Length: 350
Length: 217
Image (cartoon, rainbow over all chains, first blue to last red; front, side, top):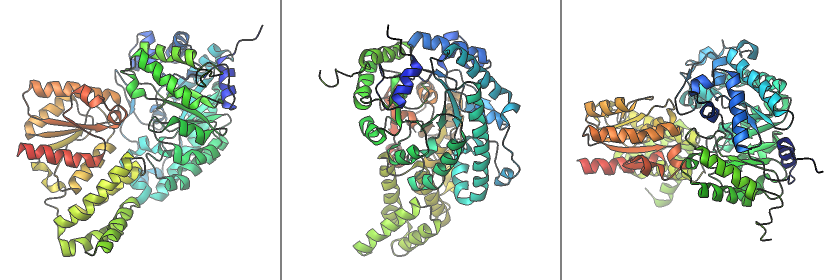
């Protein structure tokens, strides 16, 4: 009897730019676990046990190919002494910036992962998910890139201004962030994460000019990813990627999260054989899709990017909004099973 | 200005903005003001540059950081040359306001504010993290006729529906203009939440506010 293909097999095959049994699906649902458990978002994220149970139920329901260990992006700010603001119907946000004067940066030290209780909760969740995964499902750990974290540390305006006005202070902050990011990523791998998603929205030319990125964020990514002791995927969080695909591929990352603002077929051609494409369902529109529209979107994405492997179907932001209904998520999952089975005979008109 | 020289000046000013070269931008704008006057320089040099940057932002050719810094530089130029009209000095009397609804993400608001001020449109800045009730109350107290609502999170964008209802219930004749990433990614969202207008880039706000304020006046 042919052994069953596990989610991990499926993902590893596509990361090798070959066609597995079907297109892997990553439903990146961080908040929906709270809906599964009937808990407010704040309560849900207060315990690793909730996240393990929420992720387990979500995967049991939709049958997608990963566990997502992200609580929320702003959790790293708690390690840096910042606060988090919770909402009933959306992701927690970072509170006020922890740095308001450039002079403060000289006195900062990168926080130690072991000293932050909230990061410990994430590690506990990863360990729990690793047990549930039993070697068959990838567990995704998440870090904010050292280049993008200052948006929360300083506030976006101050960060953009200081790159011009206070370059030495910003350089020092990036270096500190690198130390923290490497330690945080490796702690997650040690706890059982299969891959680290390196969230780097500022790498996108939607936010940063290509030449500025090449001189700054790309150098940071190359140094940082080289010190992370496991596979990584880079996510641009809805930003465009085409002008930076070559650079991102050279960082050694295995996959790139791509935007719905770009043509997926063109993105796939740019990435083919070098870096796996992760995307690009429109998470904002998804909220009001009908099941039929969900199926059409899935089929279209598969037709454009799935041939030859090197493609994981996902949303384009790396986090599906709280408002997206279970019906739509189920329609996406069913459409992948229906249209994502390799070989894609329907696409070739066979 | 000779046509070729004018084109060269336009390109140089655009490049100065995109490269965050404040000195060059100031020199070129000052030079344009000398024969033409400030108003003409604004209309013939600054606004076309901001419009081109806005178009290139929407097509993905320039980055958000460049849009932001361009707006800041133009706002600084206007503030330096005409502090009582172009900069924030006139804002306290304005019937146009901007704020971020139930959200702390301020960059989008700051960009729109800079471009409006650089265009000579005074705007009250209501800040970030406002509730629906706070936006309604401040609009009433200040006699606001055009309220620009900036959002980044989907949940905040959806809250515009509550804002529209509250404004109508209070009988306030406020035109609401929405903008931000959720409206860019879902082109039907502005209609769904009942906004009066939507802008997909900062320069859109200039045309929309001017048009709406003409209707008021």
